[in-house]
Amino acid sequence: MIRVELLERARREFAEKIRAMSALRSTRLVDALGSVPREEFLGPGPWQILRLAEAVHGYESTPDDDPRHLYDNVLVALDASRTSTTASQHSCRDASTISTCLLAIGSFTSAAVWGITRQLRR
Image (cartoon, rainbow, N blue to C red):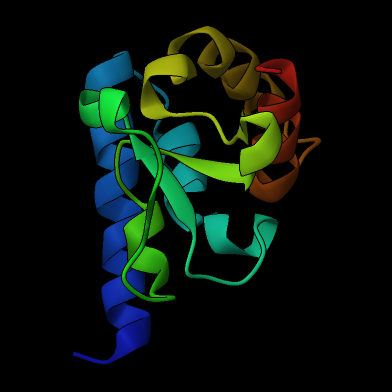
């Protein structure tokens, strides 16, 4: 399997995890979450990530710049010195209703909804 296919599969599995954890019912939202490349909203890897289950240990660096590391229940440091991060799956529940509405009216692309949702979580 080529890298593109592995990355697409990682995105889809990530979206399905969010669906399960947040009880999302919107197929359009899950499709959007599974198609938005998180890595395009971040600088080049390797990245500083925080695994929520192991948060007491602090940030760790991904072993390489493979974007598949971003499609897990992790926070990604946007600015580790300020503890500014991306949102995790756990915070998707509140913004998912807004995202679902934005996609339902069809006025926004999936990338725009992801960006708006990210802003709402700040």
